[in-house]
Image 1 (cartoon, rainbow, N blue to C red):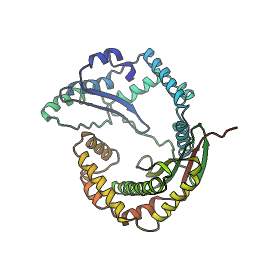
Image 2: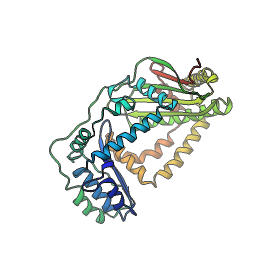
Image 3: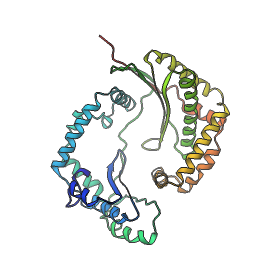
Image 4: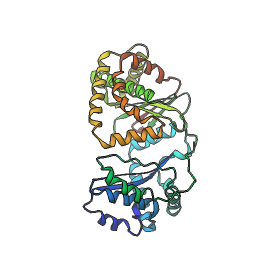
Length: 363
């Protein structure tokens, strides 16, 4: 849709019309929702509202532009397929979703299934009815300036009594322990990913406990396998916690290293996990993440994108928006005992996927 322009203006004409303006907006359809995301300067706020209105009421379908986009995307995918990292992470995704039809890796074969005209009809269905849409506006905006724009371009959107709902398509992580080795590429380097998954009741507090523990453990691993042992090129510990479609979390450890040191470093990471779940972590790690989080919060509180993200999160996860103000108290609650309890709760050895990328075997 975005490659076609909007209303009577093709993409090229629209681009020229927007020259000199600080405005950008784009529609998106994800697994569980459809949305419009955009931003503008105060001066160009009317243009932002006009574009939002047109993308919902007068999307444009340009068959030539759609085919050009499709051909360009296929070429990009073909080039990406040559990268070992892409094959590696696609394999991880397939394992974690148990090869669910809805999460097939992007490929030329998959793109060949796209029928632009049909996709456009779905877009019109999802965006042509404003019932169920909730709009968030954040920024240094005078309400007197904002009100007529909302009345003219949002309140006037066509709306019916029908409300579309997301559907649980059965994407679930596998049970048990899984270990896979992938041999691809020529570079003498390896990537290791260890993912722990489980189901826990979602809440702002539980998500924060998981995040704080992950940050503390990342610093611990960086000190150990990257600095002390000089074994890893990088180390990341990434948490994820979602309420929909099920209350589900994941904890991902990822690092790069020399292929000859994979077994050694995997064993060390597992030893560090055993230590983390057997006794409270040293207080210095909690002090370090407390300082990092407190500094980040002070910066974020001045950023529009932070407040937008927090408001969307509260709405989507049925959280009280007032709880956004609890960030400081949550940060102050971090302690060795809270990290310890979170580690015992979320490092679930019964559900663990380990995938290692090695260089291709030489014949």
